[in-house]
Length: 382
Image (cartoon, rainbow, N blue to C red; front, top):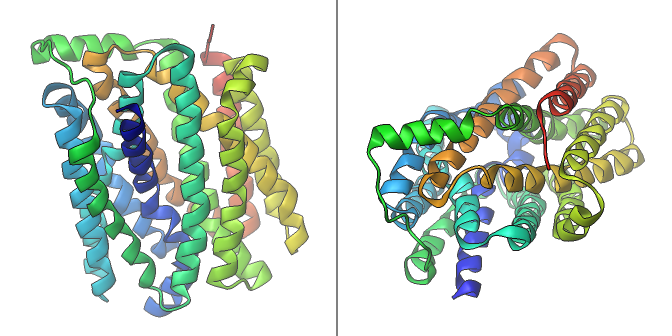
């Protein structure tokens, strides 16, 4: 049973990161096809992540009252069918509308997978599984750009075939997922008061703020404007963009898979601080990079930093709420990171509009510096 549960969780994680990672290498080709700016192309990210800001908390409440499984299955079906529909549509406005609907399906995926880990595992085992889950996430973000970039060679719309994978995953979830569902139901008022009590802690607020800025960098600097850096400075093809974006994720996967060992040597807060310092260095180096070999060191640093930050943040947060309120609590985190995902391309796009690609990545470095200050001042761990 444990093996099947883990397969469902890991497949859900792979679907959760598919919506953007597989599409980013095609951004320059989409820009050329529709004759629109790269800043406008990033609307494909903004409209996709926007529903999660408003829906994630609501979905979390339903997951705590109705159950994790029905919400997860419905979300996977919506994600798969609406995402696949984009392949058949060649109208920009309709594609944006379909991406919005796909974002509704995606709203629950990034929180329910972590919620299920919190439900099924505890103690050191929970941290270990979080590390494996982050490693799976990183494998997805490694493979999807390469796959998406390869598919984009046949046409800008071919990466939209990939969301269809979510449909068979939904079917598998129906039969394989056997998880403990919340049984003791409280009134909505008491539920909300308990959730607020779990959230209203200095460390939790600090982690939430760091998580917003983390995804500003990932979705703004890396997924939105790193392809543009490669296109402008190195004249890279969509295939080359996909391969290079994949490289750092393999390092992230390797780092995250070693979380158990890292935890035994480095405290949770120091992991966050070190990961953010790696982010700062990455952004600064990329602002100056103008040759292929200049990209090696920053991509290694970025992979190491992300491999510590994502599982570290998730493990810290999931321990702050009991089972009956965990989905709601983690859905707030999902809402928080969706804010970063939604506004990241706009924030880094603002810096890009001011001074081009170099200023865009200096803006990313500034965001990382703010992350570091918040971590030092607000996050307290045992």
